[in-house]
Length: 106
Image 1 (cartoon, helix red, strand yellow):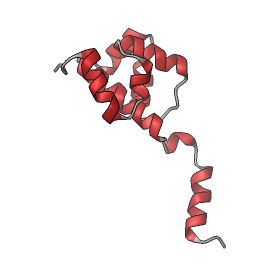
Image 2: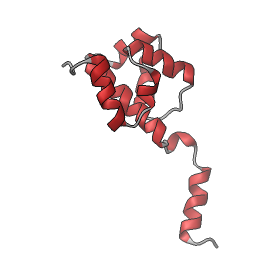
Image 3: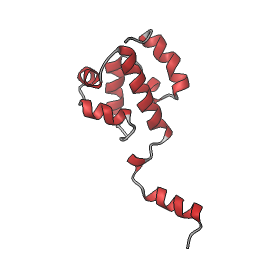
Image 4: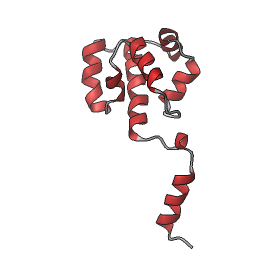
């Protein structure tokens, strides 16, 4: 029988990636939501601006999916920010978002 810490590590490795987002995916999710709300947009409005479905935007904002670079770029262009800003840790992204988007709306 495995000790508890080894058993939990084995369980974590077998869980799908979608259930435990890594730091980059959490950063992306947080930054998309912040930028979207700074624009005063709903998920649907963001989807319309970048050609993606509202449900996909919501899934990304909950860090449930690992998006491809093309979709990250589409979202960044739709929001009017650079892709690297969306992938940055929130403490680094926030000043960049404020500079690129101005003061939050709504």
